[in-house]
Image (cartoon, rainbow, N blue to C red; front, side, top):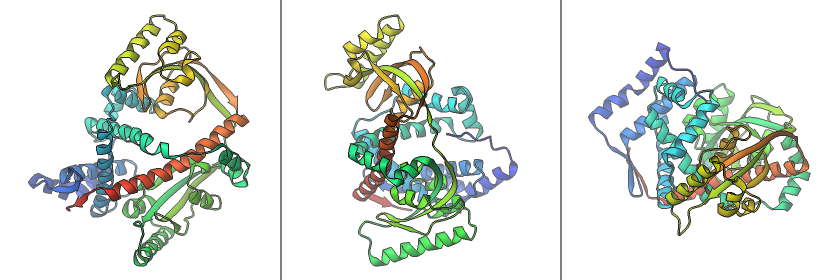
Length: 430
């Protein structure tokens, strides 16, 4: 996450005040239900607070603000989908405690060359409430665990598919380049009628024409896109093309920098891409880390709190000098590594879940981590060494598999979200 400089320019503050003033005045008089989502509600005050937060971030990023009445429906739809998922996570018993949240926030702070206290001060200086920011990060962590449970298990990539991908001309091209794309989606409902299809096509064509006439892509994405990155200006960031949906990858290979595609028809609507930049070839040297860990899972006979307590006890025993490998063989719930004393061997970026990778990336050789939580349970780990390695055939296979899994994961995630939204009871009242 990038932390921008505090907003100090009077003109920017004046713009924000004018943009939010009417809604703030109305909120002082009356709060209303904005939407009913199954058994819960989203209040208009919650919606306006989220819209104001988005406005502050857009101003900090020097992005132009679309009209407020354009932004509110986009933000409300995101809040509806988020609320649906949080209710599902609650029913599934997914939670993120303060310790795990603080570890994640510390990692974000470290990426911005700050400690946690400095990071909190920077957030407040940008006009953002620190408590609200913490809870938004907690929500993102909960949703990530929910997606791993509900979506990741739907993704399967066979060895034969990986081999075919590596051997294909497309696969060779995709590994040589990375692309920075902007994305706008004009969505279609399931089983769209010919009238709905034609209306969406015309809307997409109008967006493309406006972009080619010089309209700001970020503002157009916030105003028109139904995609998951709409409120971030449609920015997909830098990605190896192999990790993009095949529809996007095919277009990216021939799209010139600065150019905009024609509307690309897919099952969920019309996609519009803009090429912000290209870079290649893929780096051939990989930073690898030699790691061992102990995993303690919750079970039918061991609650989450008991699993955490056992992991803390084992961590303290290792810190006091007991043999890590012996304790891993006796207690670790990771059968693959327990037999070898918790040793995971040399791991490469992207090979482990984010919580695990963030943790070992913050440690020096010989350093023992604190206990932390991932979707698998409670861990602690030790870094045994680091090295730079040439990109071997084995690593290329791993990267190909990850690329295919990532591509399918994103496609499955969007389909799962559409299904959840369609099956829910939603009553929008504003």
